[in-house]
Image (tube, rainbow, N blue to C red; front, side, top):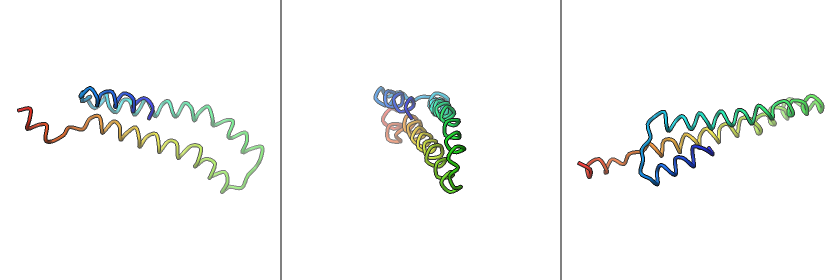
Length: 97
């Protein structure tokens, strides 16, 4: 979401339409950066869960909020920016001929 948003905004402002790998590679980069951050958080969260022994519903809620929601938000927003940067206005095809 971070890298793909900034690069896509710059490309849109410049009027550059990136290729498939250039646009969606940034989504993969955002996903890898998020997985690295979540990977660093995993063991401290697991230590707290083991130490406190919360009920299963609380544990599922913790994982949902700390891991599932950020993954969904980042991947959806990054994908939107990738698609937006690759969009070609149908009206522009006829004006450039």
